[in-house]
Figure 1 (cartoon, helix red, strand yellow):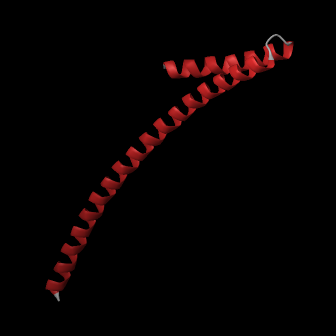
Figure 2: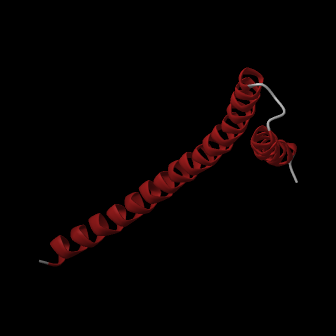
Length: 91
C-alpha cells in the first residue's frame, strides 16, 4: 500500500476517535475543533491529490486516443481518395 492511503486512513481514524473522545467530554471545545479541522483538512488534501492524479492519467489517455483516431482517419481518407481516383479513371 502507498503511504498516502495509510496516511488518509490514519486521518479518518483520528477524526472518528476525536469525535468519540469529544462525546466523552475530555477535550475543550476549542482544542477539539482545531484538531478536527486539521485532521479534516489533511484528509481532504490527500483526497484531492488522488483525484487529480486520476484526472491526469485520464487526460493522457484521451490524448493518446485522439492521436490514434487522427492517424486512423488519415489512413481511411487516403484509401477513399485512392478509390475515388480509381473510379474516376474507369469512367
